[in-house]
Length: 604
Image 1: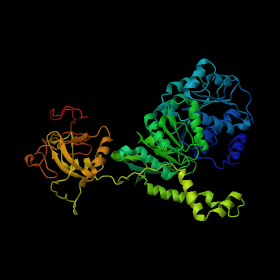
Image 2: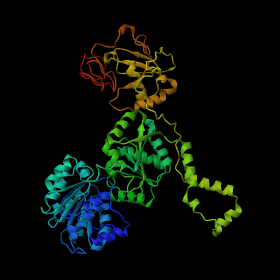
Image 3: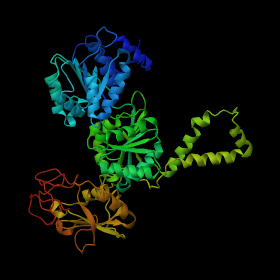
């Protein structure tokens, strides 16, 4: 038997399902001596937690018996953060406990509460539900928790993040004090430890996360795109990887709608899941994914919680996640059970540093690449067609009359041409996108062979003028202004013409061939960046491209007034936009200085 420490009835169910070896978390909860202990378990999503706690509570529910006797009150309660996860847990426990005669009921939002109450009144050995609906039934008297032998909190960290602490405390306070409490969480943060300390007794701590390599079966890729072409670039990424099932994450409901509309317009079999959808709509969308009718699911993090889609090979972050934990949780939906997966982060070129910081915090190494071109996708399509099992497994000794008729009527070249045309006709459209440079703009000026800054004369170019709200008052200097302009606008040093620094603002020129790209990148910059806007050519004076203003002596601005925009000068005692040094400052809408070290709101 593959699980020797398991109840025989559950062991037979595992064998029938093809389970050969326990996962690390399953093996950990089956260790001798834990049959009556409370457990505090940290395990990653997709590690087999449901089967693990199903096996762990079996000794408490069954003992030495083969089947469960009728019970007027539930013997076990499993609490999950979302409807989808609760239904998934119910489905898993039903086959695991099939031979024990266990009756398993669910209590989730968005369904008929009266039907759930009738199921509870008829008797259920195990109840699975979401915190809010379980509390409703408990408050109305339809859920009697007095006979509970064990309580399981699945993904407890998610429930606390969603604000369910009061509901969890209500349910646990209503349960018998002598019950077993099993708490499963991806991380054991302070709130989880506090909850465990209050409601568990001498809990055994099991950690299956800290020693494991983070998502070792997942390949991370970052695709650099223009900010205004996220949706079109996403189309090409989906076409390039051509996963049987893919999940696309967006940070807002509005973006979910926009991405879903773009995918449907181009012929993708796609579904969207949002928080305002009813349970029946959500269930139909998820079922279409599992059945293969739909191949792409577009959702927000909240709406996608608890959704488990088998054979999910591709996860795409259409929006950069707000935290490293979100990146890992999204990506963890692929690369499960020994299968390989790919996680693609769509990175607007003006948010590359933000993406790099996110990857560093998540301790993830990613490959950077440009948006797949139409030619690259066509090459992938060709390879996929040549390797299609339908062609590889086709028998030459066929007796199909239609096949023989076609072979007699048309030559091989015509049949091949028809096959290719039919194959391409069913594929979604590809976008014609000019790939962006994958290399990050240099944060330092160009150097000579010996590391010296190459002197350059002011360039006379045909281009458009722009201005930014920083000048000599903030110690503006081309040494850090040029890298800043390159980073925000995804341009090179050669794309910048004249630079003229005045007291409270700086004017600079962008060449005609780069101006449209520069505008689009600046428009999508993060809110805390310096504001850049088009401008007329400034009057004479100011400061030429890369020399020193003769009237300023050796340094710009007043003594001690250092600082700068995200990487400006570090010297001096003053402050600056995310610079280093003394007191900071920002700029007001009206502009104009308000005094040394004084705070001014940034120009909008």
